[in-house]
Image (tube, one colour):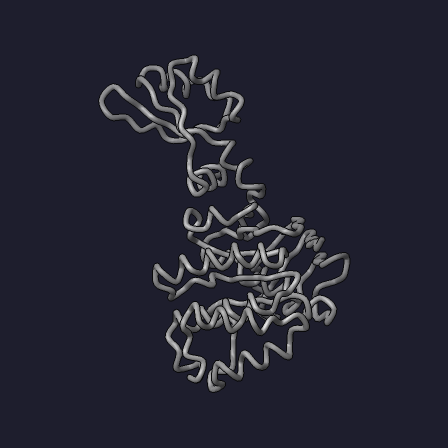
Length: 289
């Protein structure tokens, strides 16, 4: 089992400006699992992934299997980070990039690489700079999966992919985890699109982790209540729990509320209909201050 332990991580850029990017970030992750990393643009998701990959120094504790991550060959040889913003030599042909990756990662699977090249139809004879945005993303996915590392970090790897290839990516991601179970972190803004592959999610803010848990425990904390307007208004007037904004249409109202699944029968007894919510709606509701 691979473990990631992060305690009180902080990261600043610039000796003069001293811009704080991350602060007070603490969490633990284990394998085998696909963990979703969620957060607004600019919150530091890419920075965090670079730190976990051992590519960037920070303050605090960042350990992979009990070993410091930064610039540690034992860690970096078994961790791959890929995404559209990961810099690759622009003049190299895709074949050269793949050959380099084959020598870089000890557990490289050449047969898997060939299979993925065929699946994504990447023109490997072209220089990297000549590839489309989607083809660059596909090449990054091919490298990440073929590397067969204990830790696979994917930074919005789907950017530029069309609908068919995004669907292919998720299918191959599930196949990859079945082929070689590992610790995968997928950074994404498309929560609902990716929710079916996640085992857990973590919501990142600049001042720490706002929310973390397995998918069922997070969606199980939120319910949509629908019922007579008067009943809903009476329910929210004495909130013993987190309550969302009430929406009404005629005499019917609906509202999101924090409630465990075991409480739903009690809510139904009040004359309210209970509905499950998507992971995206649950995350957005729970992370609101």
